Length: 385
Image: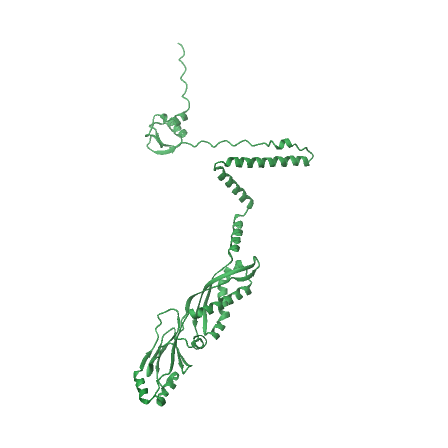
């Protein structure tokens, strides 16, 4: 390329006054500033915002890392002095290299979980399989190491490209931490925060050395047992709540008999069951007497002593709305209404209940009239003379 072509190409190049990056996403870790057909002019500005770091890569080698602030780029800037010096000799672009912006803020709410169960030896259940999940957070603490070990020549790096490797490392370390703790499965829920703190202390050194990343938070949200073990735990808990199993069995049996008695055709079933139980009791008594020197009479087995049936429940009591002579209204059975009428025979007494046409004298209602009892006998005839 001749001198004129070189000057023409320089004239077409766009000189950059300000180099900056505004991150509109929440998952971008590294952004390479576009430098095609552009050059940094002497005296240009580099703006690095909070939560960012600016990295210069000169001639394929990392030359400088800039923290938050505004920097003037000229021949006194160490990172690009060699590029400005090159103008004197070959009329090349003032800057030959790349500018990377690295996000140093925390990347929060990153989810993790165990893709396969963690095998564990438990003192209560023996061999169990555990599953766990939660969230973690991290940030890039050493942009130079992250650029060398992770980014390479990639111009755009997001959290999705590194989260998979981080999750696998975290789950593997968690399995080791739980196994080494030898904590019973039923007590793991009381140590979630301890696991998180132990895991950060265990992995932060390795992450910083190999990735330039600091693990800022690790949260264990849940550690669960297999469904069959959880069902067994629920059964054991229910048994503990019940307490006296004998009393509970009697209570359940009584409820079952009451429910079955309300179904049609259930009476014969329970009658047969009762006869069978009674016959079993008679056989037991006969065998007991035979064992103590008595005689066993098979005829008595076929005729068990049946308990008399219980009396039927009393009929439901009829309740009337009663209006007293003083105007007050209440609800009373027939007997109490009759007593009130007899206590005040000259007063105005009225009664009513559903189905009656209106308020009626109590003595005209058969249910109440029967409560008055038989009429008193007539007085004896007068004595003669």
